[in-house]
Amino acid sequence: MKKYGTDHDPRPAASAGSGRPSSARAPLRLAATLAFAGFTLSVVAGLLHADTASANDHPTTFAEYARSGIWTAVHLGQFAGMALLISGLLVLLVVLKAPNGAMAWTARFGAVAVVAALALYAALQAVDGVALKHAVDAWVAAPEPEKAARLATAEGIRWLEWGMRSYQSFVLGVALILTGAVVVGARRVSRPIGYLMALSGLAYLAQGWIIGAEGFSPANTIPTLAGIVLILVWSVWLLVSAWFGKDAPPGDR
Image 1 (cartoon, rainbow, N blue to C red):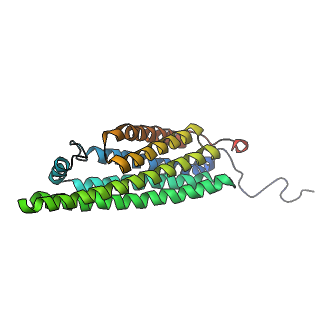
Image 2 (cartoon, rainbow, N blue to C red):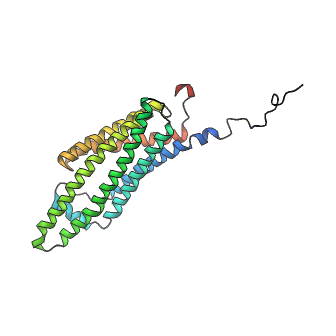
């Protein structure tokens, strides 16, 4: 006599072609796509930024800023790029599902850091993209007796920008280091991606220190280029891994 359920199960059996592995990787693909899109948009917007003069030569630089007709749009593009990159990191921290213990707390602190980095960047772009633009426009248009006072006002906003960018770079650096640690610990994607994330975080920590001490000086060139190259490498690697790679076996996670 046959027992019900022994030879026939009405529930559909899971199969390799059911699409489940692909759907399981969809959040990871979203994270990778957001991060890469954010990096790309930030680079494109940065290339349109008026910066031919030395950034610490305020009269020359401010005159160049005043001539820029796309200043506000460029900074809005930079903010949108950072928002996409931060969203990618935040989704990645959720997707990786760090194991309990120290790694879970690392993921939580990483999520706090990425949100704080975006908030600081929004304030930075408000200072740089809006307040500084109005200040330099007023300085250029002011009559000669008022120019010294207008220049002093613009320089004060510039120094506020230094402080905002310095601390934003510190917090973003910490966020990248913590996210990199979670990537390494979770083992859902290649562990070197996590190491490269952490190295890009160290580059941002260096940028934050130099900007806070010297402003936009030539000493910041190497840390800035290192951060750009490292983010390019790990974001492309993560994108390829998310779309074309496979999850690690459950026993290896």
